[in-house]
Image 1: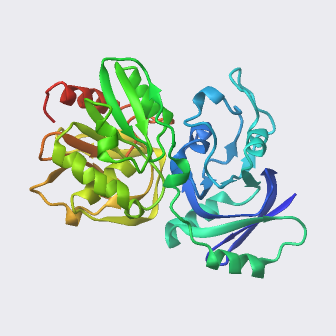
Image 2 (image 1 turned 45 degrees about the vertical axis):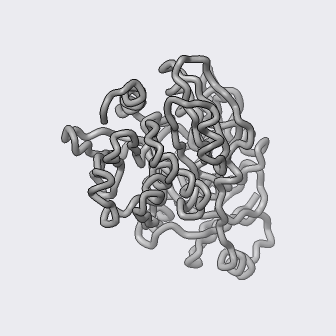
Length: 358
């Protein structure tokens, strides 16, 4: 079916629909990864977004359910140059288009993803809409885009059930703001019992589990909208329990300590982003998916030290807090997809729980 993508600035891109073909409004972003689209599709941090893939051919190895980072895809639309006509892989469970149809996710192919990406890099992330059919009304589309407001998606992606994973001796309370499965797996394989709590759980709720440490997960959207979580993290920090925060969790902990965050022009989304560890001067290649970062000018040096910075734009990628019990990173040490270079941070977390130091 004929499809049309319109951006907030009025630019349009004609293509062909695939997946579940229904009109959709979204925030349009791009991802530079060459592989890992199964993990991307099921990453809750993409909730509310239409993702443009810069790599031109997507779907060639199909969808493998074992690679999923949650129980379903969360993005609003998938925008690609070309969908592979064959899903060739012995692990393939279903082809890409069928997977999107099953989960009511619309897609568009045949558009110039290179141009879209360049526009987003120059003008910044924009709202957009994809419409389908032979009677598409661009004027009506523009009105809908202008009226569109992306509301907080954290309540949508956070589990309401307090699920428990693993049976190891170390107990971790995980605040689920949209957690990726590999964060849980990374803890379980290191001997942890992980109990997930919903995004609005109180500090007292989490402490009722008698945890040895607290994990703050990734998640979608503007961290400043998570006011309840920010308030509860003030209590977490004051208590002094060992805490490791990733992505949105990193931003929320920073906000709880009076630091500020801001929205990047077009975000960091890909699996080859270099970050520098200021403690060792080593550079690591990381997997990233975020549109907001902590404002380095607002960090109180008596509260936290900057540990990691982006080698691309100098933005803050990680903090060590002066209480010696809390640290956080903006990127994804659990990767999925991407390099596992910084998986050692999970080991650092367990050492901290065991009485070690940052």
